[in-house]
Image (cartoon, rainbow, N blue to C red; front, top):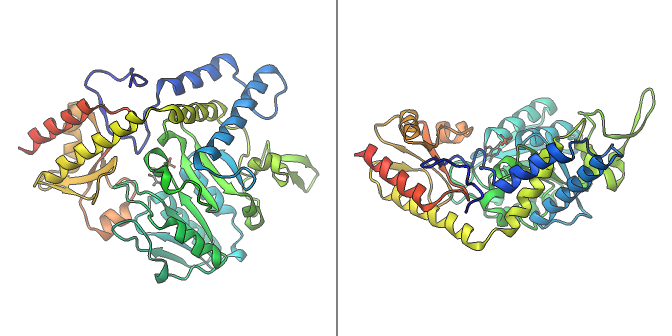
Length: 387
Ligand SMILES: Cc1ncc(COP(=O)(O)O)c(C=O)c1O
């Protein structure tokens, strides 16, 4: 694929789980915004503003289409990133509506810490659920009555998925709880796990989905009843008196403003629209290439006796350590060969360090930009280091 033609010869980028590389059409869309219609959205009556409005509106529609959700029930709001989205929602939930907050042991610090802060603020109990090796949650083990459940649907260290996500959502809804899904990882390679399901909130980061840096909150309109206003400002109101305001979000047409205080990252939103177009048109062979590369690298890591692989099955995101070699030093050695990989605990300290007791790890996360030659190079260099 030549949409990543800007990559230098021999540069192997394996950090897509942090930020995917942006394909050229996305970079072009962002440039086009700056050069041809640099303007504020949703307020501006001149021509540039109208172009921005149209593209921003299209992006909201494309997000719902990508997730197979109905515009009648759901709203798309933009923010900084997944972390900000989750915090924004939790910080405004009315404590009186809930009995407790629940998360799981394999979470990224983003929901893990945000649920701690929520419990602190509301004085509600917090429960950390165990995820099975296959990523599912045994719903029979827990009481979800009026619970706020915040969990990922794909992990950021081995990609394991919340296989029974549909059952979880139904179980929680039956007893008046809500489900907030962290889809930061799933969006890029495992979106089928969440498509068409109806949790209360889905948060994700556009920068992990081939788009510019941006957070997305997809939320069920009914959630409004369970929210207090907490983070407010420009762009959110129809009218303001000395002591009160009428929020634009009260009407469906401008419901998205509920989480969009102040100016938004208009160019980035337009860029997300371009990324979703790009993904929609992507030939099947590019997805096949991603999974072939994944399987190829996974088989190599799995078959090497010195490598301790955390993954139980192939996933574009794989994590390991090599007995007797410090992972950070290994990361540096790979970097000297132009192989860009991450080392450490990848913001999943609790599970990797305290539950599994693992040393710092190396993470390879593949994206649609990777070529088979990248994997051959990694195998060759890593093989050399191991020997
Ligand atoms: C599963 C998961 N959740 C949340 C996040 C946080 O994303 P961001 O830093 O974009 O807010 C990440 C980032 O890697 C992640 O992988």
